[in-house]
Length: 173
Image (cartoon, rainbow, N blue to C red; front, side):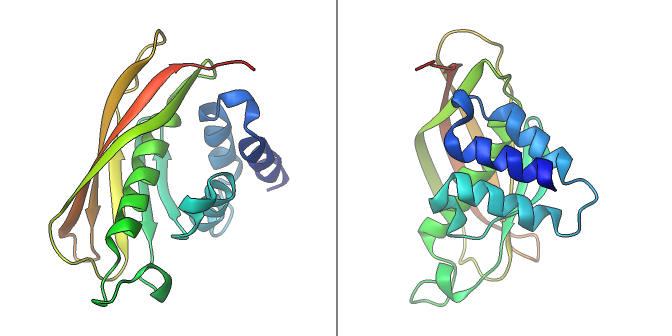
């Protein structure tokens, strides 16, 4: 647990721009810890405060794949008593980003440069986003599209996020 907290500090302070290996290390450091996914979600939310606004829970994390969930609660609802559209975008960004960035080597970084969302039906209850990314080889900047599918507790698709991430070498300051 101490190791995960130390790694979280690295994430929050920028860690030299390369967060992929730090994310993987933090996830592994929490292996066997009760509440691992909620704790890791808080670490991610500390590093990226807006992402923390949805209180994400990381369910699964491997290089190129992330499953992230959020509870349906008042703080993420709209006036129609369903999960707000922007909370869903936030979840889509978190899942696509974790899937991609966790697989990147220390010499590379990714930054979101575009995102779109297709809303399929009203989102209610716990929503789980699953994203899978092809990890590009090292090289010059290029855009990578990552898709995240958001489902409700019954497994029905409520939204589909398509995120465009610019991946390239870490820029040293």
